[in-house]
Image 1 (cartoon, rainbow, N blue to C red):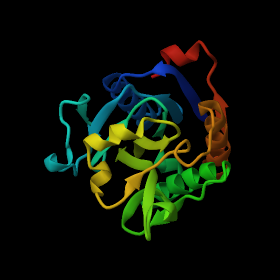
Image 2 (tube, rainbow, N blue to C red):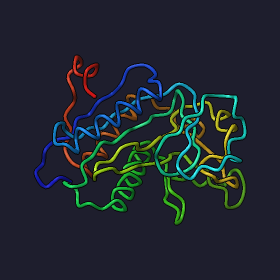
Image 3 (cartoon, helix red, strand yellow):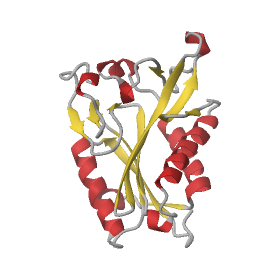
Image 4 (cartoon, rainbow, N blue to C red):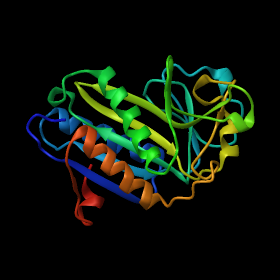
Amino acid sequence: MRADGVPVEWKIADGLVPYPEALEMMRARAAAVADGMAAEQVWLLEHPPLYTAGTSASPGDLLAPNRFPVYDAGRGGQYTYHGPGQRVVYFMLDLRQRGRDVRCLVQGLEGLIIDTLAAFNIRGERREGRIGVWVQRPDKGPGREDKIAAIGVRVSRWVTFHGIAINVSPTLSHFDGIVPCGISDQGVTSFEDLGQLASMGEVDSALRAAFERRFGATISLAPEALVSAA
């Protein structure tokens, strides 16, 4: 929570946002926040099918390099997939106003995801040594767990960018082109795969409620501001 109670802008993109455009807008917004020229912002969007490589990505984990475009993300972590049916949420938050604690931020994002899943009767869990949120899948075998949400953040000048990706109804076979997050002994799942049908709007509403409980108040951008805000 911010001590001063200033609300965070809440922005939802229409359509599929190209990754290079999103990266440029994210970086520009984070820099503006760091300079005191813009408010904190949460940006919800979907990307066209693509793979991104984090700073720890191993070339051998890109199994199908020609399947979709591959982008260097500049965030921590390894390879991940983004595509339609996956809610990507980018956070431009000022940690100077939030305790300057990156570990606390990551734990907060994990909790945000777990709270959102709980609204749809999905039990998400943390795992020691593994970033992200996991769902137990005893129906697939003893000890089987599937990842339902990924987390990858970067902090520059105490302002965050990048964020989380929650699998609502993506094409799960698209993950076959990579070793997701470097983990080969578990799988990937989604709301749809678990039999929980939810619209993106319903997921967004649950995300916003969970965010406000953990991080503070939000304010929606006016429709005309969605085009010009950077």
